[in-house]
Length: 539
Image (cartoon, rainbow, N blue to C red; front, side):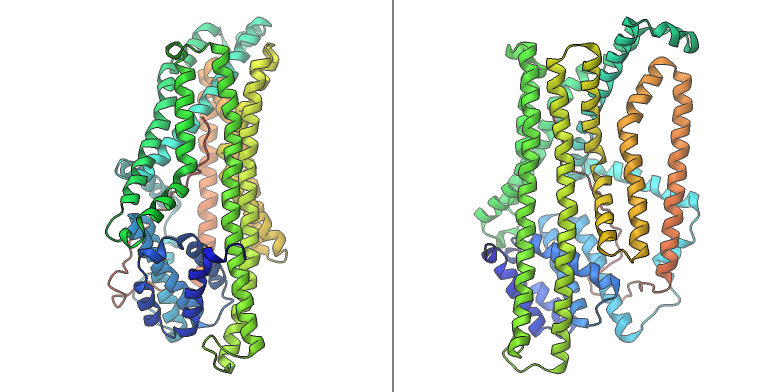
């Protein structure tokens, strides 16, 4: 097998777990026995393993305690990994899941409950819409205030601002070129008769006034992110006391593998933007500078294809590991022995049968997950290619109408980047609905995700340019447009609130028991924040 050396230690550990572990206490002790030298190289396999297992456990398809023990075991190891790596918020995420699994096991086995205590679901279901909205705004402000103290959030903010910078560039260029063409065709007089006098030169001067700042940002954003990622690479390569359980050279290789896509992207675009935006310093003629940018926009497309290739290798390795596990347990049944070579008991036969069913389900879900992720990569690649083609075409075709069309294509390409998260969610829900067409909940989720993607795409394609153009021509109309948009967002938030409460009502029939004082010493109800922002950005 091509990847057997990659997953061998992880697969052997998993098999020993199911052969030896009989209680939750044993699972906890075994998890705590693994140091960072085991956790770091197996982190991706472990995270995907838990993701697949947790999905099946939540569906209630598994009635063997040992699988819940293994989910608990994975949570502890992932919590310990992130804590050793310095990612406290992610460690808290797995701590929360660990608590939930422990309490669900107690509920399954002993029916323990705490009637004097309100569950989180009950508290949430009693909040009004305005409380829900206020909490979302408050959490957003807290995240914003905490961002300067967390390197990962600073990187995310820099990445997001860089995409917005690029988006502004092409929206502004599309609007200014359209205004110049309208003036040339004497269309502004007719528009002005409705909205009043339109001073094109003043509008263009206003729209282009941020250019010096944006020119600095075109270099500074990439430089900042490169510095932050470089500092993290050095920090983790040097290693904390816990990280030093993992070989220093392997730590360096792991960090380079993890960070090289962003590091290379930032280095390339920081240099390209400097020599092209400050070409009076570098002595590069304007046309040459334009073609340099166009060439490296195609580099973005190639770099995304490379990142998809790396993700595909990880998917293939995980799939091969699951297939290897399935063959292992199938052979146990055929030989009628357990992992220790002893004859199979009736209970063990039942466990292996459920394990094989679980592995088949996990392989199916892994394939669906990869299909969605692959589509996500290709969607981003399409955005990169449109951006490169549109920008290159604007260098070749100088006719005003064609140039405007080229800049509109560039705007559409950036809108694809901004809509990639909604597209991935839509693909995941679509694939799940196709996989289980009789599941009404999956069908409803698919339609909701489809509508959300369509709206997100339309919003990102049209609204910014429409707002800029409307403010340029008639600020009163722009204020009305803004009010309409805010009203729609409030309506959307209300729909989300209603959906959340419906799900909480269903959840209330089988509530998750809150943590009690008898929990492990390091298990506490700390809040979890899970910010997710795409890493795919262009220059």
